[in-house]
Amino acid sequence: MTTEATESGDGLKELGEHYRSLVDGELVGWDAMRPFRKCLGVGGQGVVYLSERRGVDGFTIPVALKIFSPDRFTSPPEYSAEMARLATVASRVARIQQDHLVDVQNVVSVDGIHVLEMEWIDGYDLRRLLTPDAYGRVREQVTERRWQTINQVVMTEGRQQPRLRPGTAASVIRECLSALSAMHRHGIVHNDIKPSNVMLKRSGNVKIIDIGAAFELENRPPVQPCTPIYAAPEVLEGQPGTPASDLASVGYLLIEMLSGEQPFSGMSFAEMLKSKRSVFDWLPGALPVEEFALTEPLLRLLHGLVDPNPIQRFPSAEEAELDSGGVAEFQRELVQAGVTSEYEAEIRHWIDEVEAEFELRDPSDEVTRDFLPPTRVFNPPSE
Ligand SMILES: Nc1ncnc2c1ncn2[C@@H]1O[C@H](COP(=O)(O)OP(=O)(O)OP(=O)(O)O)[C@@H](O)[C@H]1O
Ligand SMILES: [Mg+2]
Picture 1 (cartoon, rainbow, N blue to C red):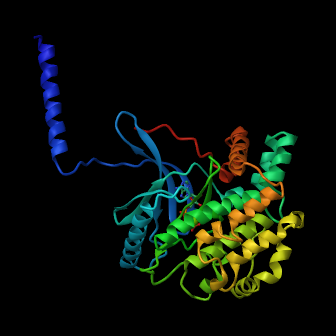
Picture 2 (picture 1 turned 120 degrees about the horizontal axis):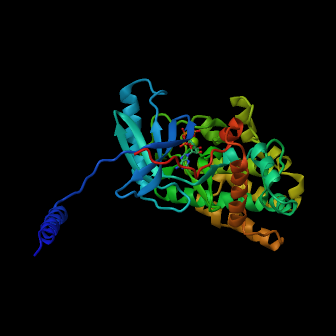
Picture 3 (picture 1 turned 90 degrees about the vertical axis):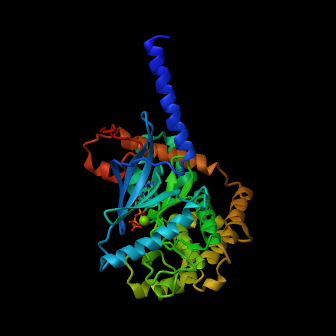
């Protein structure tokens, strides 16, 4: 045998020993580093970065990291207690595995700061997409014919911001409800449904994100933060969030998507509460006259979501999705009325168009960069 063959035989023997000691052991471990590639968002709770999980031989997979700021807390123990609570919720959410709910992967602590690792969602949140800017930019990008289809099927001009056509809005809401019903079945209230926490993926599907305000029904936090304009009236009055209050938030989101206007923006707390309590008085007038043919089924659906009395809402997210008067029934009525499209495919094309328009622009155009950072671009790895 040559020396080379002996060496490679020895090397293989050594590798085999490593293998056996590894598989005979009780655990395996390695170091983890997460380079920040891009800031995906800054919110009330901290910063979200696009990062990568790296393996060997060039393997990488994008992940999102939410880094929780201690700024809004009064002491380190208060921050730690809230983070510990959140880790428990995250651990429970991580087991849910629902297609329309963000996939939570880990919670770690780095120098006392908590970091939540989750799947990176390749898409945009509704707060960014429902802007006059996003709507107007697509027009520059598409043919007149496609522009007409977008306006007939996906979105068109609304009062203050673009409004989604009923079929598209229903498709978004249905996926939100299916994510919420999975959370509720696991005893978790999301507690912060709003446009910035609903993402449209490039695939055309919806993902609910941001479990930062979520809690377990059997382990309610002492203080429950809420976003007042999307919170149910009973929550504004200081009652704890419930699955029913999540439904009300979905309803306000639906009203906003359908009308192209945030119905409570600019209102004082008292005005907002009053308006939510008397929602049935103004709701018919908030729906666009152009959708007159669908007003009745839309109102029926909305009533079950935003009734000021939580007992009168749909008994659950699942029923809001599937039962009489729910979104699925509304979708069937659309079909009967001859208003039907492949909504997910339409949303997918439209997101591509929004982004293509962005990518054609001069990268030095700061306003454009702020508006929609390209989600697919990665810096080359620095290592
Ligand atoms: N997993 C993800 N993949 C892609 N983008 C994400 C992800 N998570 C969050 N983002 C982006 O970052 C933004 C802020 O994230 P998040 O909502 O979790 O933070 P927050 O501090 O709770 O914000 P807010 O207080 O506004 O609710 C989101 O609106 C979204 O645009
Ligand atoms: Mg958020």
